Amino acid sequence: MDIQLDRNDTTPLYRQIVAHIMEGIALGRYPAGTSLPPERKLAAHLGVNRTTVVAAYRDLVATGRVEARVGHGTWVCADLMDDANAPPSIVWQTLFTPAAGRLRESALRDMMSAIDRPSTISLGAGTPAPDLFPIAEYREAVTQTLETWGAEMFRYGEVAGWLPLRRELAAWMAQAGVHTTADQIVVLHGSQQGLDMLTRVLVEPGDAVVVESPTYLGALQTFRGAGARLLPVPLDAHGMQIEILEQTLVRHRPKFIYTLPTFQNPTGATMSLGRRHALLALARRYGIPIVEDDPYGDLRYEGDPLPRLAALDTGGGVIHLSTMSKIFLPGLRLAWLSAPLPVVEAITMARQTMDVHPNSAAQRVLHTFLTRGWLAAHIAELRPAYAARRDVMLAALAEYAPPGMTWSQPEGGYFLWCRLPPGVRARALATEAAREGVSFVAGDVFSPDGGGRDHLRLNFTGNREAEIVEGVRRLSVALRRLQRDPVYDATETIAAARPVV
Ligand code: PMP
Image (tube, rainbow, N blue to C red):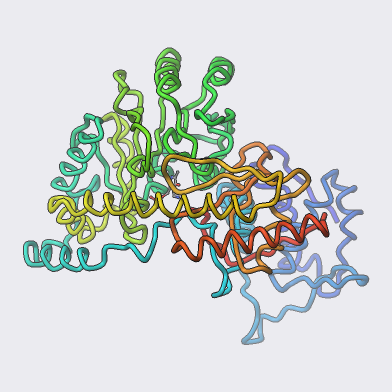
């Protein structure tokens, strides 16, 4: 089989192999019954890894024009095009862009999240408490907004977001000490969209981006999807280790520094005031922007609040992302960013080909909610409820967890970050825990550099207290069983693709 691979082409090698063989079939070079070379032989012939040929054959089989049977090899099968049930003739895998390929690789890793049987208690998802959603107030806000705005609510709107809402969000940020203007605000459908937009306008394949290690999975996926080179900087209980950051900045000149300074996802760590100042000074010295992702900043349960990086910044070098998902209703998909004007300009341009503008009706209802003071009141209710849930989880861990397991004690946010007893892997535990009826997120998915295999993230906000206790009890049962009968090669169960939030 004369396959010419072009190693300078950005199309992955396995897809070049697929394209060649499908072309050969289409042109009659490989008629039905032609045997394809054994994987190992073709790999050796082409000078590629065997996994490359395995991936190519897998995609070929998916087209329906190639069949494979263990022990019998792989061969071209008959053209079923005359058959009404014929498989589609388009080989999608050969058409996707390199960026789509990169996303697919990482998405597969993330499907490990939960095997959600109805009886499973999920300590995995970073969700607010559905039992505390302010439904009555929301209904009232919808009614009032409809009465006030009528048909206006459903018209096309401004790309950056409805101006009165942007003004209101600027006032909301001013209360947190961040001085910004409506012009500097872009309303988003989720802060994940903000990460995506910023990446579109700032990152080209090969560009470097600084991330904390570990960090939010959705950001890692976005940056990886854009072909960024990730530069991990380790994190301790006081946030990103700024001493290490400086060497990275000098050596790699990254496009930006992505940080979650307050109640970090997944660790719950909060960057100290000293480090906040040091980070801003360093970033300014080297002229590198900071992206401050701040979904949890309003959810402090004890201790003194620390100023946002955007509040401390005097050099116009911070892009601040905030979201309604963790303090209000995640399904509304409403968030916003505040950024220097050139950034706002670039992303509003980019947005025109994406979703045109944010949902007009949802923005107006949120505006009503904010101006009535209902959001502040809702957050004031959430804080003690979430603090109590956190304490219940801490107490349950103290009661049930086996010796050798340790966990963080965050002053706010959504997550505990747990270290497993020596020798236990989080992925193996996930399988055991699923049998026991509890799920969590294994730590390695948050790692830009292969760490975190002995860690797991537990969410304490999404369940009622009794479920939290039962979830931790089940987890401990699974953990003790695994310690008794270690599983070294746990099968990872692939559930439906769902985000790890
Ligand atoms: N950033 C961080 C740090 C998060 O934890 C999340 C959600 N868990 C997001 C961004 C995305 O949130 P959303 O798109 O719902 O605003």
